[in-house]
Length: 217
Image 1 (cartoon, rainbow, N blue to C red):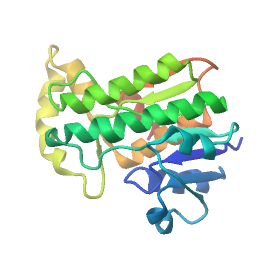
Image 2 (image 1 turned 120 degrees about the vertical axis):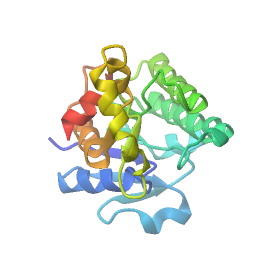
Image 3 (image 1 turned 135 degrees about the vertical axis):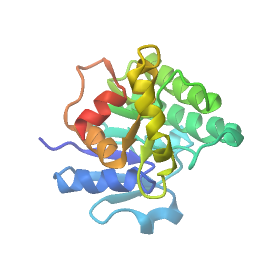
């Protein structure tokens, strides 16, 4: 079954790979992007120009038949970028939720972050608030909670693998090690494709933690 898909953050780290995978599987994709990024939209997707921080702009582009995959976020998030998490990450998901509610979008897919977590508290708080915004709107939704997505240019946490191995052997640390585990870009894209192709029951909100994301890939 083909799904019409509308992707925000379409030219980003995950967005480019996701759109390629969706097109390869026969799904029609429209890529929401800024005018300056049109040239970077994956061949085969339809570029739609707009401002992801403005609800009216998203609403004017979104079609009622489309699954909305929301991937907008601050690139390379770090503790010094707390203001950006509110200005970009949270503002964009609020705009997308507002647009999805008015369009009666059949399925809203959101990439959040694993929580609770001992670091990146401002980032986690912004993403958790995004989840609450989705839940309050009563949307049919899938929320994915990776901690860190390993891929080209995003590999430094590989050095932490021995620590993850030790933590997974200790009963007191095992749940946290699983929740805050690393996933690969391939696993993340596979989980997103699976979410698009297999939406949850209408009106429900499905949460996919790290183990479920890994299983998809």
